[in-house]
Image 1 (tube, one colour):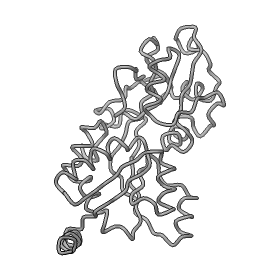
Image 2: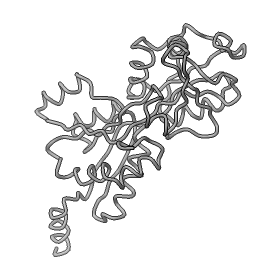
Image 3: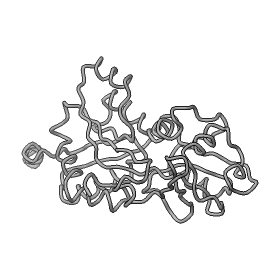
Image 4: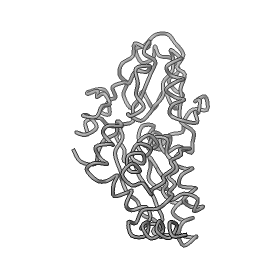
Length: 271
């Protein structure tokens, strides 16, 4: 009994929770896992579990009060705000990092760059063959995240100019599945967070000025904002749990936490 009382007292004193849950964006997932792992090493009482599922899943869990922090790669939507408001739950929004969204193809594809307009054509189904954009005579196989994904939403808004994805687009449950599918399919194209890039896929240079300049996704081009597809990554939490989650959130925003952001492959808040 004495030990139990001591643990509770220490928890209240340090502001550290015995258990915290983070849920949501697959983009934020590897970053949150690494931050939690490092944080728990120096805060022995903290028990943080991190699961993915998509930004929409995380924010739905916040509405249902089944997660402490919702991870999101997009801003909270109006209907999600209204649900929280109707439930009488105030929330906080924190930008924890930035991400360069990479458009990827199979390494065997000779295409190295595309304009935003060409990407829109490919993902909306108007462009169906790689020969239409300077590639081989090969059918384009398009992979996307599911509609619950914040990356899906961001890509639709900022790359497709809010146009709908083609019905032929293949929806994948996680970012890793897109990497695997594109690596195994010569005619494939998809999009992923910068931290998921590996040697089995090739990132394309992208132009947002109708082909005048093409920029490849990288840490440096994301930092200097020359790469056009960069987005903030968010934590959302209820104001009622702020004392519980703030020590961890503050750690993520600290100099040490932001070093981890860059180590994992995302863009820190400061250069």
